[in-house]
Image 1 (cartoon, rainbow, N blue to C red):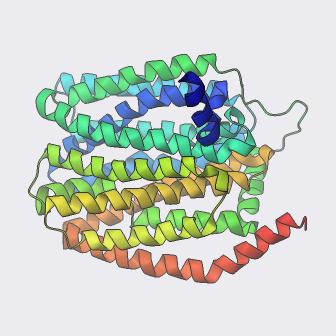
Image 2 (image 1 turned 180 degrees about the vertical axis):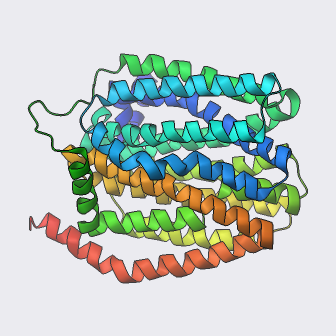
Length: 419
C-alpha cells in the first residue's frame, strides 16, 4: 500500500517528494483553514456592525492598500535577504495580530474603526508575506516541479476555502467571532514549527553586487513590461481582480439581501466557491506534467466573467450555490495558471521583484475592486453589480486575448529558438 501511494505521489504530486516543500505545504494545510475562518468572520462581523456594503468594501480596501504602497520596494529587499527568516517573522506577527483581534472582540472593544485598523495591519504583513512566499516556492521545489508545487499550494488554499467558511459560519453562529479569530491565531503554530525545520534559506548568491533599491525596482518593472507573456498575464489578473473577483464584498450582500440568508448561508456560498476552486486546483496539480497552457489561462478568465454575469440573475440559493462552484473552478484555474506562467518566465535573480509586481497587481487591485463593488452594490444592488461586472469582464478579457495572443506565441517561439 505504501509503495502504491508513493507511486501515485511521484506521478501526480512530485513536489511533495521534496522535503522542504512538503514541510511548507503541510503547515499551510492547517493555517489556511484558520485564515479563511478569520476572513469570513471579519466580513460578517463588519456587515453586522454597519449594515453597509460600502463600509464592508472599505475594510477590504484598507486591508489591501499596503500592497499598492509597499510591494515594489519589498520585492527588491526580498532579493537581498533570507526568504526563510522573513517568512518566519511575518507569520509570527500575523499570529499575534489574530490573537489581538480575538481579545478585542472578547472584551467588547471591537469597533468598526478598530477592525479597519487591524485589517490595515494585516494588509501590511500580507504585502511582505505574499511576494516572499511566492518567490521562495521556486527554492522549495525544483523548477521542473514548479507548476505542480503551485497547483498543490492552490489545492490546499482552496481546500481551506471549502472547510474554513463552512466551519466559520457554524462557529460564528454558535460561539461568536472571538473563537474564529482565536482559532486562526492558534493555526499559525504548525506553520512556524515547519518553517524552522526547512533547510533552504533563500539567500541570494554570494558575491552578487547590488545597486540601489530604486534602481532594482525599476529593473524588475522594465523586465515585466518588456516580456509580453508576463505583462499580458498581469493585465488579466489586474482586470479580473478589480471587476470580477470581489467575492468578499458581494457574497455577504447577496446572501443577506437577495437570498434572505444569514451567516450560515454566507458560509455555504463561500464553501461552494471554495469547492470549485479546490477541484480546479487539484485537476491542475494532477495534469501539471502537461506544462503551461496559455489557452486554458485565457479561457478560464473569460468563463469566470460569464459565470459572474449569470449570478446576477440568481434568486434561488441552490442555483447560486451551483454557479459559485463553477466560478470557483474558473477562478483558481486562472490564478494558478497566471502564477505559474509568471514564475516560469522569471529569472532566478529577479524573481522576488517580479513576484512583488504580481503581488501588487493581485492584492493592490483589491482596494479598487472593493470600493467599486461596495459602491455599486450600495447604489444599484448586488444583482445589477454582478451583471455589469460580468459584461465588462467578457468585453475586456476578449479584447486582451484578441490583441495579445499572437504576440505571446511569437515571444514563446523566439525563446525556444534561443533568440
